[in-house]
Image (cartoon, rainbow, N blue to C red; front, side):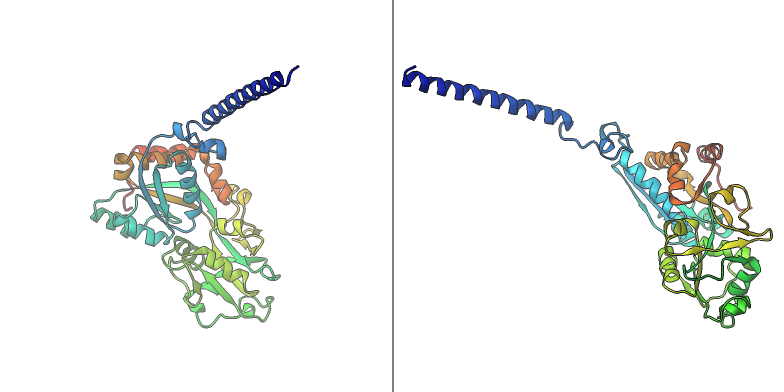
Length: 346
């Protein structure tokens, strides 16, 4: 073969290879565009938890929730999951305490209010004066938990009388040592942490322990932020505190739950004892309160509340540590909302 023919053949091969490379590049580019859906991110494919963005409801809007720090983890989880499928709905969840949440709700600042106790007649009246009707919706069951530092090896089980000795109004300034609560306890300072007075947990605990809602000693470290209470108990061997079970569930490697003797022996807080009705008197219902007008007039609010009460989503409740309701109970809650069953003062 002559040098010219060899040169011609080389140029031909080069041109052919160039065309093949270009074709392969074009195929790869088109394949990439198809896989990416024309540049739209498939959130469901990434997370495995939600519908693809193109199948989302198309809802838009803003939903504001506030209230109980106890219920906060549930509403936060529901909001996060709802927004995956509805990215154009912005949901904010605050935790100013049950009482603080009702103040905002009655002022028209929120559409949903988290509550770890039932609404009070005066709160219903305040909302009514502002023209706001509310629907009471049970969403879960809590095992209010008394906790101590991991190094506490004496307060493994406590009676309601012992807790009253610690937390009664008369204890302020006088009961400041563990052995004053029980002679078997050590001669060590008693360091207390608990919810503030805006908390529904504070109301519930004081009612059950001291026989009157709000009756409590005041010389303790109080906070509406349960994480502050967790840090306080974790940091002091002699500390004792109380809050919703979710905060113990999340931090059980940092503290110990005290078993409670409500009159029938020592019982630990957990799902089994709650469902069996054995963890008394600290098993309690948790609520959200929904604005009737917002549910009827705002499609985003309606869709979110329906999502919240859908039994297929109740695993999000269990993931926080609380006890989910039965499918029938969630259906009853949804029926209350759809029927506009307004809560009135009793």
